[in-house]
Length: 259
Image (tube, rainbow, N blue to C red; front, side):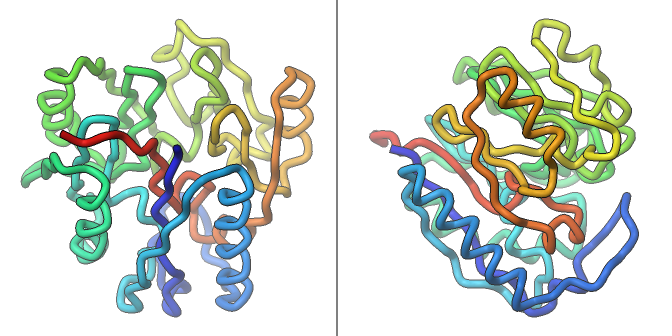
C-alpha cells in the first residue's frame, strides 16, 4: 500500500524562499484549498494520506519532501541547504520514524534536500544544486550502496532542484526540460521534453502508474496522453508561485514490513 505524509500550509507562505522565479503574491486561503484537493487526489488513487501539523514560523514547511528521503528499507533525514529550512526537519522526524525503524541523518558540512533525489527503480539520481552539495551526494552514496542502490550525480544549473525539471513517468521514461538539466545523465532512458513555456510541467508525481500533474499544462498533458499514460490533474497554481511542484508536497512511499 502506498502512503503519503503531507504537512499543513504555513500562514507565512508568502515569505517562502525563491531562487529562479520572480515573487508573486500567494493567496493563502486558496493555497490551503489547493493543498486539500492535492490530498484528495492522492486518496482517490488509494494512497493513505497523513497530514503533519503545520509550522507557521517555517514558510516552506508544506514542502516536506525536502526534509527526508524514504526508501523501502530505511529513511534518511536530510540537512537542507537553506539554513532557514533546517528548522522544519525536527517536526517531520516522528512521522517518518513511525514508518521506517532504521533512520539515518545527513551531517554537516553535507547538505541534501529531497527534491534533488529522483528514484527510478533501484537507481537514484541526485541533483548538484544550490541546495545539495557534493558532500551531501557522497554522504547519500555511502548510505545507500550497502542496500543495493546505485547513485549518479546530475548537474542542475537552471532550477532549484533536480525534480523541479526532471521526474519519471515509468521505470524507463523521464519527463524533463533539457535547458535546465544535463540530459546526458539520462542516456539510458526514453526522454519526453516538455515545451519551454511549460518547463515546470516536468515535475509530476507518479502514483502506481498514474501521472499526476498541474492542471495548467495542457501541452505537456497531451504529450503524455498521446504516449498512452493515464493522467490526473490538480490545480496547484499558488504553489507554483513558491517554486514548488507536485512532488514537493508529500513524502510518498510504499508501506513495508519493518524488522
